[in-house]
Each structure stands twice: as structure tokens, then as C-alpha cells.
Image (cartoon, rainbow, N blue to C red; front, side, top):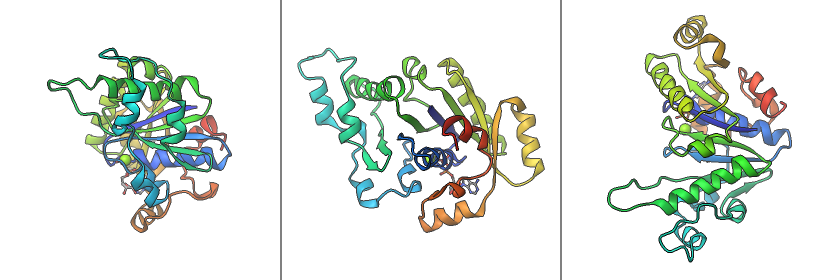
Length: 252
Ligand SMILES: Nc1ncnc2c1ncn2[C@@H]1O[C@H](COP(=O)(O)OP(=O)(O)O)[C@@H](O)[C@H]1O
Ligand SMILES: [Mg+2]
């Protein structure tokens, strides 16, 4: 199952992404976890080794690899370089998990960053369309790494939303972007739900039938974040509220 997670900053994208990644690994399923948010902290929340995380180079900054993949191309960008070696050699391995950071691509100006773009696009295409492993993409609200082509490989997009007006407003914007990209299944996940009013507020603000889950506000999540402990070490640690998604995606 290929999953993208989006929503407003602070809504809980990284929390939800880490739950799903661990649902896969705890059920013995291989998974690519992709940190595609410039505010990158999925590795920390997954509890990966700090030194290894520090040493891991974001894919957008692999100038040497990007140049080699385009070698001989001159100004022509190789639109479909083979990147299976990148998924193996430039990712952090933790059991069945392959973790990578996308990194930010500098924007336009006078120079073109076409090679970086086509490289990241090739990595996403390979993971989403060619490889059998599951994928969890932790994305910003802009979902700017996705294109019409790669979005076709996203089987499920989850838009995480807190019960606030700003949260709802961003969720609607993300839903619009996902529709433009023709992503098949887009569901909302309510997060940090404290009571019935929170739940009712979200169901009145967004189409109620499009909620695939509601996660309660959970002190343990904050406690673990404060201590820098991994969010999930065993199946019992998976947060309630995502059962439908767990069942659909990782059989948990
Ligand atoms: N259900 C929850 N209960 C309590 N705290 C939460 C919950 N979900 C997320 N948080 C906390 O809210 C903050 C933002 O969550 P995070 O997943 O990093 O958001 P995002 O990736 O969307 O910016 C973090 O400190 C996280 O621990
Ligand atoms: Mg995040």
C-alpha cells in the first residue's frame, strides 16, 4: 500500500506517518518511510539512530549521484534513470524499514534545477509504481513533491486535521491539491480529539463520510516526544483511531 500523509504544520502528520510505518514493520512488512516535509523529523519520531540520522544525506543533496545519473546527457535530463541502487545505498536501514529524507529543491530564479527534480521524481516513481514494498510519505501541506505522474501511484492520501478553523482551512486546501492531482482515495484523519465537541466540529466542517479515523489527544504521545522516545515499539503502542487504516494498509 502506497500512502501519502499531509495536513497543516503541527496537525500530526509525522505522528500518523510513524504509526503507519510501525504498523508495517511490526507486521513484518517491508516499508519505505520518506520524510518529504522540509520540517523533517520523522526519523526522530520513529526512534532511528541519531548518529545515522545526522549522517544521512537528503536525496536532493546527492549532487554526485544526480550528476552520475545524468552523465552523458548534456543539457538533456535523463527522465528515467534507474534508482534502485539509491533506495539501497542512500537510505537508513532499520530491519524492514528503509528511511530517507527528500530534502528541499532550490526554487527557480535564473537557474534550472531540472536534474534534481527529475531525480526525485524518478525515486518517487520507482517506489510508488515499480517496487512492491509499502511506502509512507510524510509530506508538507503543499504536497509539492508529487506530480500528476507520481500521484497516480498514491493509493491513499490521508489529510490530518486538528479541530481548529485553521486546521480545517488547510485540510480543504490540501484536499483541493489532491483532487487536481487526481489522487484516488483521499481521507481525513481527525487528530488531538479531546471530546465530542471536537469530533462534531470536524464532522460539521468537512464531509463526515470522508473521515477514516479520529485519534484522541493522548498524553503519552507528548510525553514520549518530550523524552525523545520512539512513538511505537510494539503493536500495543499503536494509537487508537486508525484501525480502519491499519486494517486496510498493514493488516494490523
Ligand atoms: N494525538 C495526539 N495527542 C497528543 N499530542 C499529539 C498528538 N498528535 C500529535 N501530537 C503532538 O503534536 C505535535 C505535532 O505533531 P507532529 O506529528 O509533529 O505534526 P506535523 O508533522 O503535522 O507537524 C508533536 O509534539 C506531537 O507529539
Ligand atoms: Mg512533521
